[in-house]
Length: 149
Image (cartoon, rainbow, N blue to C red; front, side):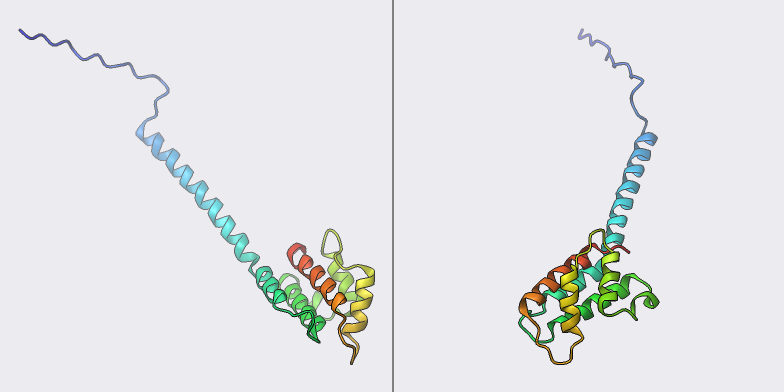
């Protein structure tokens, strides 16, 4: 008495993906995400020394006597993290600053700053000039951020 009509199923189009293809796409997406995250982690780990040097640089009080020496020590440590010891360890004075300028696209240490810092850094009893220390600290931060490896 009650007649039911047969269920009409739609035809499958040729664009539908099988379960295997969906798993394959999901696996590719997961692999791409893992590669992106691991490369981000690698770069972050590789640049950890830069963050540490910048933190140490921020702690230096420009009004404190000996600030130039502390900044120079941080610069030397940073350079030793990136370049061979033979290339870095023996450098000092203008040669040291010229070497640092050669490792950046644009030299952050001006000729005047190099001469002023060299004169004060390697003199025995000269007090540090606050303006020179501030310029040196700023240029040093830029070197730490942007020097090539």
